[in-house]
Amino acid sequence: MKILNRVLLSVWLAWGLAGVDVAVADPPMDAVIALDRTVHFEQPNGQPVAVDAATYRVERRDDTIQLTPETGQPAIVLQAERLSLEMPVLEPAVLSLMRNSDEHLLIYADPHGAVLGVIGSYSGIRTREILTLKPSLLSPPIVSAPHLPLGGNVLPGVPRLKSVSSASFAHLGALVPFANVQVTIVMHNFLGSSNSRISYRIVPPSSITGQSACMLTPNPRITVSDSFPIDQAGEGRISLPGWFTSSGTCAIGIELLLPGKTEPARLVAGPIFVDAPRRVVVNQTWNLKDTLTFRASSSIGTCEGTSVGPSNYAVGIVNVGGDLGLRIRSGPLGTECQYISKPWLLPEGVTLVATTWERVSELPSGQTQAKCCVVNAFGHNCITMPPHVEANFNRGTAPIVTGEHTEFTRYYSVTSADRQVLEDGVIIHENTSPRILTLVKPMWGKLQCTNTGFNDHGVKLVLREMVLDGPPGLTFP
Image (cartoon, rainbow, N blue to C red; front, side, top):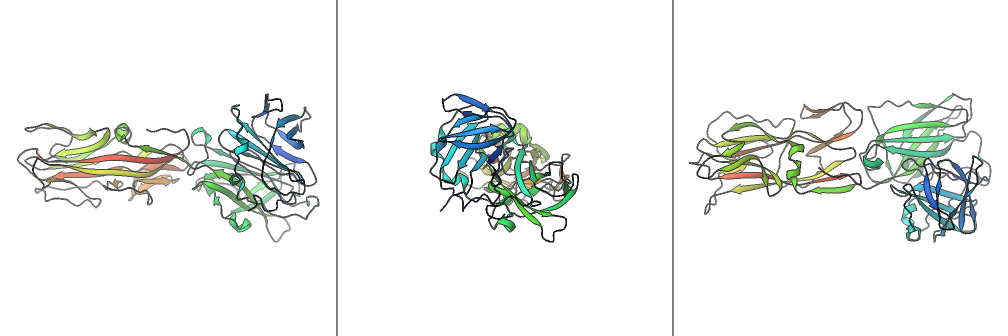
């Protein structure tokens, strides 16, 4: 399978990722790239060189790549390596993209079949990993429309994609699912006077390319105009706030409604590579005690402190071998305790994957019949209690379920950009910012013990594990 399906310079390819502008030049001009920040490369003599943010003409010089600034400053020659990739082109072409959070990749192809690669870094840390470059980095391609006549100049008034950049608000600027992101798309080659406006609409990229790709979810709380002005250079710019819901190759489809045209011009901004999140497993959950802040909301008997009897027991919120536990003991009047946590607003781009609770019965030696239990998610008694007035406080919460291992249905959490985050008609969070957030819902549990002569029976509800996905480098709690 070819890495790029017959990449012709009569087709505009735009590769954008995390603030890096990427372009393949119009025929018959030289290949051109635009860097929006300094990238550190290596010269043929082995010495490092810092390439400043600017626009550069890109040329091949044997096994080196020469970058010539548009500002007229001296050209910069970079050490390159030949790659075993097939990229058939009719004119010189270059791809410029962010490979990960610190590496920038240049790939140059010429009509003679030579493909050269260069890896730089934003931090200045040098790497020689280019020899291990895998073809999967470039596949599958996303090709922008419209197609242009072979070998001809760019048709006047046919919009072209100039650059795509994205800024993430997550930890270290990581672009991961459910991180708030601002995508900026720059287009050029418009006809018309300066300050005239072009109407547009966002469409699924698959409707243009026929290739599946995840797409941006626009933020409904941020109003974006459905048109943009053309500046004096004949360029237009769209800024789209939102988030991506999955990792992988993403893109944005654009339909432009041009004056005097019955059919819209169609462009695809992409690919935008959304990184897979880093998974964090919290299995010493006592560390979350001050984060979740469980408290007793109502009680019969002793629900916090010490249960006094022939043996004294710590009850309430307790440390169970490094895990957070809720515990009660029986007594002459019976015991019923409800516990509820505070909602937990997760950091930017962090989502809850799984939560595991365990019920642990405590019985006197030699007995098999438990007299204490954990109420199920529906709030019904799990044993026969002494007569009393019963009140449940589980509205607006996620009732704790033992053995719950999946967050597929978002049982314990909610992701929302709404002004008020509601659960069962109860406001559990006022979202004052217009950005998307993930909230671990207040968790509710009720433990019961029937009446016994003294505190010889008990039960614990133990939070064994929480699994979260988030940006690289983020730690919990």
